[in-house]
Length: 581
Ligand code: NDP
Image (cartoon, rainbow, N blue to C red):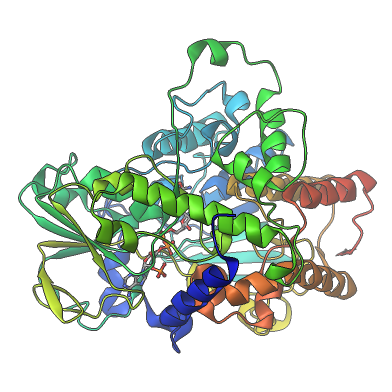
């Protein structure tokens, strides 16, 4: 060992202590009211109008990102044709519609990340495809499965209410619609609502400011050419900033990166797709590759590693979900220290200025934050026009009319970009922007007031014919589209089964829901110890993890265990746990 575990434990604890704040997730402000401009859609045609709808569909799908697209695709495959996608964005794509910041790319290999490649006969152009290519793929999925037909885009849901008179949901929208639906699939996503730090003075800044998920190309220019003479600041150094900073640095006048906690930045090794490999792919290749990736990243063993990248090598060295509640009880802690030492050594190897290198080193357990991978980010700080403004874990102090204050020093800026992430841990209604009102006027907010309650992370007692897909109480994975696909297949299967069998209502039984909640709490508790010792972030409610987090979290089997469980449930065809009318 080239490190002292006790010294590292002490350093991690001290760094964590420095970042803890009493206001926890309350430190962020919602993008509404005087912050509403930060959430406006820069891509939509503001003049768009249409007549309100008061019709009926078999399935209303809320959200047209991967979740809505995959649910629509799987429903179409099962012969369900009467469906409607509804999304507040002006096109499909979800995450990939909203996030178009410079440098955006997927951080999981595109051959396993991008869904339905074989169905569409498409092979991505790179191992880690850029955002524009993924967005175009979303549009191609919508075209291929005819999901634009009947879709309501640029339409924001305001309420979804159960009407017991004829067992229909009524979807109300900001365009005056009252759409009736036999089934509702909630595919609203995760990390869907941008957030801003509640830094004093944030609305006083007189330069130009926006959030990375609403990149203002009208201001920056499509090739960022308008930034050539500007002093640009970026707040945040998470997965978004890691991709964005290296693209901004060469084209802006000056770049100031305001850092609170450094990310881990490991090797990316992107490469163009080899055409001979692509042309030799055999039928079933994508699902085999996905399953292989899922198995290996969940700490399983396989004869071959098809993806063979930073994620799969990581999981081999550092199993994710195998340790007990005390992170010190296993050799996993030593493996984690070793990995983090390697990450810190990479900073020393790539960053010339020793003080800057020191500030860029992360001091926490590897999985406390979303691991990042980039081959240019760290070297960006060797440029003369780039300055790292380290806030030593305290965050930006104040924003003024002219810039950003850290350590009492004002940094003057023309443009300020917030790479400050998305709401996590707030209520479902707050994140989606609407309430779901089930049987007997029960709201989803009231139902989940003390924690999420579902069967299989999809069905909720009191909310018949409604499928709520999210990470809550579903299978953990680093490859989110895999989970979405598992849930979409399941939702589509249950709906198709219900339609085939003339079922009027189906809903999670009370006991089945209780049992699933207990299973999730027990399984998710395996990482409770890690949450408590981790540096603050959105994984641990900014350092204030509560018992409730175990309930609102993933079902911590491997992702394939969750998928297998749902597949076995479908194969039995007894619909165990659902109450059926
Ligand atoms: P994050 O929440 O990960 O990062 C927000 C950043 O803002 C953090 O560095 C945070 O610091 C910083 N911050 C917050 N408040 C302040 C403050 N007051 N002063 C200074 N800094 C502040 O958001 P991202 O958008 O970067 O990423 C969100 C998630 O989106 C990722 O974790 C990942 O899951 C996903 N993503 C995926 C990508 C992909 O390729 N598939 C690409 C990009 C994102 P601190 O760490 O101290 O809280």
